[in-house]
Image (cartoon, rainbow over all chains, first blue to last red; front, side):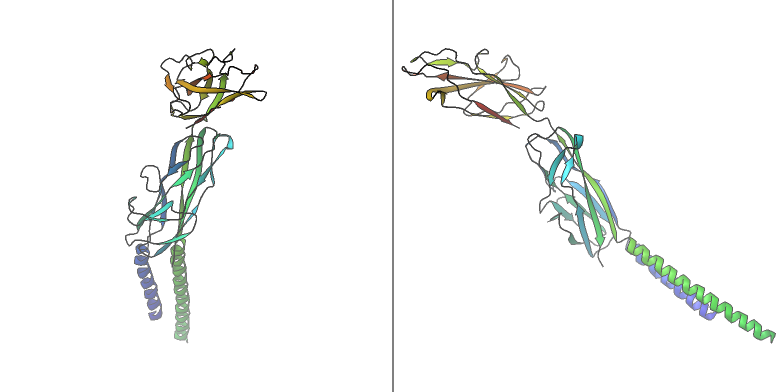
Amino acid sequence: MINMNRESLVVLGVMLLAAPLLAQGKPLTVTGVRGLTFGAVLPGVPRVILRTDPANSGQFDIKGPKGGPVLLSFVLPLSMTGPGGALMPIVFGAGDAGFSSTQSIGSQVGFDPKQPTTVTFPNNGSASVFVGATANPATNQRAGAYTGTITLTVTVLP
Amino acid sequence: MALQLTNSSTQKQELEMRSITKLSLVVAALVLTGTAVQAQTNNASITATANVQTPINVLGAQQLNFGNVFPGVNKSIAATDLTNAGRFDVTGQASSPVTISFTLPATLGSAGNTMPIVSYTGVHAQNNAQTGGTAFSPAAGASPSLNASGALWVWVGAQVQPATNQAAGVYTGSITMTVVY
């Protein structure tokens, strides 16, 4: 009985210790806050949206890890799809993504969204990623609404 | 003897309990570890959207027609001449500003002979009657806007200067207008 109680105590201790540890490392969440909006695009006229554009840039919010390295990687479309399957190229430049440890669009560190990038997460457990791009419509681009999907994957590194 | 049996049973129970406790510990550790690992990666998506406007279409609707020209007598066709001025019809996105530019020939040709064409004039308007139209220099281009229906009309006039010994014949040349948003 003494041994059993001792082992129970160990289990209890582990669980009690683990609970605060889990609470400290909150579940990682990534949220798509705002879509990347090109608005009206004229055929033959490239349309650039900067990552610092507060109304039209794309935004993801990340919550969870308190400090430490985090890997950011995107799945980016090569084109947007429009009426009848028409395609319009979308280009992501080397500085079209930005990481903000303060979640402020005015305070970003730019990075290449085409390359997996490691950033240091802030101790408060909240950060944002902003993304811009260029839409390149052809001179005979079919009129209509075009869409594409941008996915951000966040991995907490050990 | 009976006491020994009881002790043996108790020891067995303790061993079982210990095994259960160890198992619980392992399960708890696995659950906790599993939870932690599961939370290490996550993703989300946003949508990129664009609304492409109507492409520009340009039609050479009417030729610039000088009619009969006599050697040594200059002849002008005004851009305001709805019958003889050259006319381009433009369609595109309603109310959008556009930039128009021209490639203008310096001469007209006929079987190896040339005749100078100079003094180009232009008018653009948001209707085909030139009401409220704006004069401009084709050589310099212009920046009008399409009307609320996405249409624009552009007229071009010029002057030909036949020499006194200009060879008779039909003289032609190409005027090209380019329109971009």
